[in-house]
Length: 542
Image (cartoon, rainbow, N blue to C red):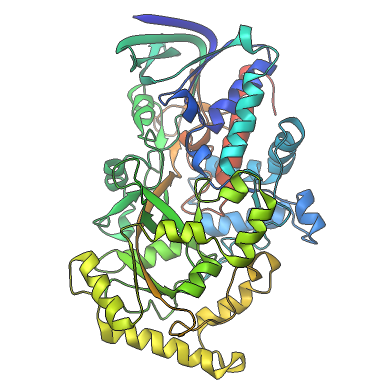
């Protein structure tokens, strides 16, 4: 058996693990970083992400005239979280994030690691039936999630103490925590390159392995019961190694794992045109001017579905249907103006920091992305509704989509648009008018575009499935990221030598978001929890 030794072993090389390694080296501690992926894929789900980060009262907000503050942000957070009385630690972590994210994450990234942010803050999760983000808070990393991880990896690998303090091992699968006399002394697992067992021994062990969104069997096992049975199809938009293995390993040693039915799914998942794994899905940013239809072709109602307001509610509405998938119906003009996909792969201009290309895509549409996604098996096009419905049914292999329902939805919507804005008695049109009031949305949102427009053909229908992404519950920790035991009555104790950070810890305390999220809070919480854990290990506080 191979044996490695250090002061700290970090299990998982996502953004949380990388941040922790940097901070621990700053404290002069010897670190082992274990990751199951290949070296060139270091960065986990963060590398694949769009790179949006939630900050409060940031310099970018202030320059835009947004007067945000922590009290308002925490109130918004609680509104979507749905915390119970027993969720004491999640509430404390929520307050910790909101009150310190700008000082301890935004400035840490921008001043020490060269991270730049797009100058316009995006406004997502505005809230529908309950308050969401009162102000725009979604700060987009210039370079997307790939640029974020690349900068942090560069900081880690060029650290002045790197050669003597950091050892990285890739293709290493962690299986079990090593415990002696009640203290965690490291981890054991398999070197998957040489197919040999290993042990990594350390005074302190940090679990940074992400969630379990990449394990669709576990997603089904822990499906949120009020939503009924899980959908027949759940696409995998997470990371292939976000499997929940270390959640189980922590439970084996009496660690407390909570709220595994709290997941952050997306409603508009589509199949990747070049899948890298089974049911590989991408998360659309659903076009606001498209009609969102159920599996029969009926428009959702009485409240129509529209993006940017309440992702969890949208998923819930789809899951109320007999068949838990949906369609979006639009035309090519809407698609060229509004179509986007969340993730670094699909945002070339932001990822590669090409401002002129970004402006071209913003004002004229991303034709390359549109044409690529038309190769996905979830997209069909036609010049008439009759032909489109026929193709929709052929795609699904049923006769569920009713032409009469689709016609009713489309013709009524177009008729209301024809009346003019003074008579737009339709909530989707009112929402479009609302979103266009903010400059970050106006340029990417059509101005009351009809579906049946001869100048905007062809028609497009997109079959959308629920997409697994992030796990909101996880390993329960205190405010210093120390893992807690399962409750014995009302008492719990700290498991010596064991820490959990990032998504593995439910982004803090085993579920700091509650049942919902304000978006952009995931990457930031990974950085914050990692910095807290590193300081705690060195006997300090952040």
